[in-house]
Amino acid sequence: MAISFFERRAQRAAMVRRYGSPEFLHVFGALGTGVSEYVEIATTFPRAQKYAPLNNMVLTNNSTQFVDLLINGAVIFRVPAGVITSLDDTAIWSFAVDNTDSGTVNAGEIRANLSIPPMGADEAARLEYPAMVRRGY
Figure 1 (cartoon, rainbow, N blue to C red):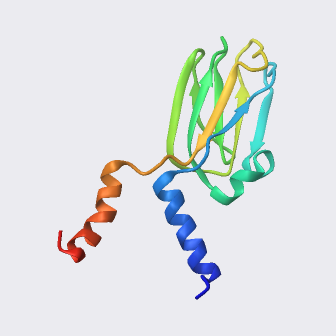
Figure 2 (figure 1 turned 180 degrees about the vertical axis):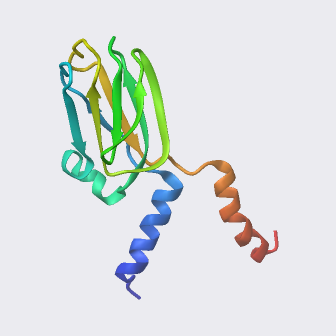
């Protein structure tokens, strides 16, 4: 018997939830004072559309400037110079980095790594427990 579209979709969602998604890397270009770079995930990463929305971001700011991180058009927080910061459990459709400091950020000094992380061991155990009880383990 053939699998329906909805069954296939449910299987894919369960697989992404369990194993996560690939990581999508964006390297920002040079940002002058008051300049921002906007990234729409569906446009920049076409392969990410099947995992959308991504919910994990690791932002690396190797520059000497403070920048603002915007998620879905709203300012989330200010990222200090030389800091790696993580944002979890937030639906990310688009993001931007805004250089509000007085200096220039060179190309390649700010990187964003986006993904859906894999399920943790505790979550996997919670999913498997009802099935184990039904089987008599």
